[in-house]
Image 1: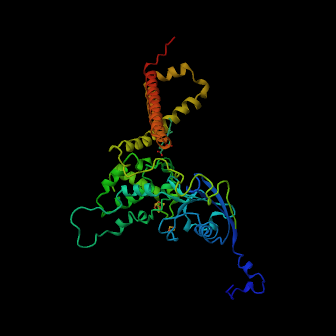
Image 2: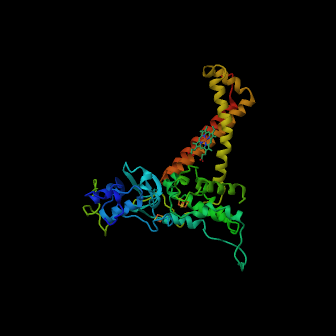
Image 3: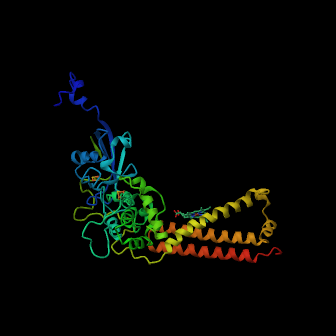
Length: 257
Length: 157
Ligand code: HEM
Ligand code: SF4
Ligand code: FES
């Protein structure tokens, strides 16, 4: 122990023991699947000593680095911005890197599963390709006609505000894989694709709004939404996902956007 | 710190599967592919969506009014009999009321079930046949009901 300022440990023979005081014992219950070993899924319990102010991602790291190196999951930034580590924690979709252990009742076993509705490749890793296919299908890029301007494309603050909420998406798939329609039918575009279409449909500089609306008018488009609000609850960025979907529906009905 | 493995050993190859011969992935239901967005370019789903909301609003009045008259007012359910029905269907107003309720409730309910089938039936064949049964039952009920409302004879023997 290299911290001489720790007053309360003075005189205590087991310094290591007392510096352990802030830790709690908790159980991580992880849904594991390794096709190279078995075609069966198993729930495996890991008992850990963790600081409750740490995150679920830290607990997964501890398992992977200290107990079982075969545990497989995605993460990159570890700070809620890359969208790699959406998973189903205690039955709800969250980012492991933004979920503190103390906030999800560490007294009971904490369950961790892959997000639902996408093919499970190994442990917590799913095949994101169908998700990104739906994203590509709404053409998530600026489309304009005519000559390129020589200066930047200007936009008023109010026009920018119109789609501000949907610019925040990090494509983590937490919303799409929380949607019961998507669980049963992966053909549905899903909330995330609609959010990212919304971001351009309501952008005053973009000129392909009609086209995107037509794409979402599809059999598997916005009309499959049943206003369950799971997506809004799941979004780690706090985007009002269901509201965005309803705005696209309204734009389709009124052709005003 | 301990890892309690349950039934399946995840780290050592005790089963038939190996790195060269992995088990199949856990597939998702009907995944999207590059060729997916090729629905017919119609407004059918939009119209169905609007119809559910409009018919729902009308059904609030029609169904609640119907239940009130049949089950609550004027002696409740015990008053209903052949004479009661005959008396009401003598008036074109109640004929139109019941006809509207029949058509709206049937189409609304059938479209609702169509959504449910689209959501839950996984195989294309199952989906197709469930919908055919649904449409047949809907057409039969609507036609039979309409026939009865228009050809009802209070003097039947
Ligand atoms: C009393 C007034 C009623 C109102 C306001 C109403 C409204 C609605 C609405 C808005 C939906 C669409 C839900 C969605 O797409 O998210 C719906 C679905 C449905 N309705 Fe009605 N409805 C009424 C009466 C009825 C009746 C009488 C029936 C049966 C004949 C019925 C059967 C259904 C079914 C089966 C669904 C699909 C369920 C689902 O989408 O999960 N409804 N209703
Ligand atoms: S809308 Fe929210 S939940 Fe959905 S992909 Fe974007 S950031 Fe994730
Ligand atoms: S690791 Fe990047 S969002 Fe969690």
